[in-house]
Image (cartoon, rainbow, N blue to C red; front, side, top):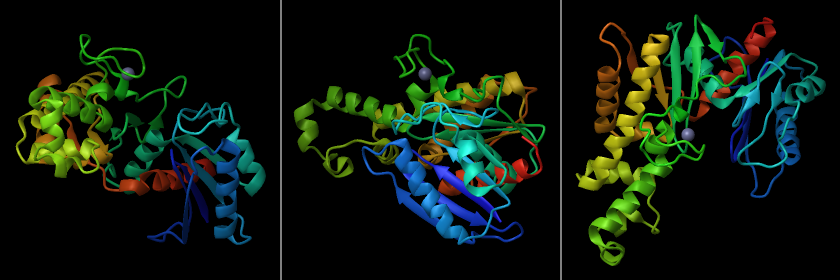
Length: 319
Ligand SMILES: [Zn+2]
């Protein structure tokens, strides 16, 4: 039996999986309460895991963590959402708890492994998985194995600079893929465009009130308004798709993977977005560099399935 754990930004999920079966033996989810600290999240997760295992010992434990991880050392570097995670030896904690081999990696690398082993990447020994959501992250599979880089920092396509004259990203650099293509930044760009276009007052009482809902514009608003033909929304969505396409084309030229697998909420933005990403990536890469770009299939469970694959690798003594 494999124990798979997913420490997301706001939710914690534990599942047990029997190799050969098609579904989870058991599955539990809890929300990380606002103001929670790392030790509370760990305690909640361990309680769910012990409940699922009901006294049984897992063969191995795999963990997806929503933040930077030093894979070789088995340590969480930090969390951007929950305080107290700094330099936590999570692998040792889990080994001690479950007396089994354990492996911990960041969510993008783990999702890449999940899509490779169980999802849209099956049979493709070289791929880049990209999540396009509140941020933009990536994880490599090269020659059938995760490629993490010298310091577990490979795959950061979100911070590839595609427009040196562009707006400043959270990382401090201008024109990153994430700064242009992620949901919250596209929403911000649309909010600005609409208020400039119509004037804040007219916008408050205008026909976009329904789409805006409680007054908040999100990445979903951008996609919906673009689908209805709103000019500003189309422009914002296509600029985001352009930024991601340039990033993908450059990654293709540099590493030459066979496939790009795209997951995350922004990939639900409709056919216009997909067409733009594929067209720009194709225009950016050399004609001889062949690849395809497909949608992830594991959805929200990608980190859990990846954690299963990670645990299976740990069992084989394989990174
Ligand atoms: Zn950046």
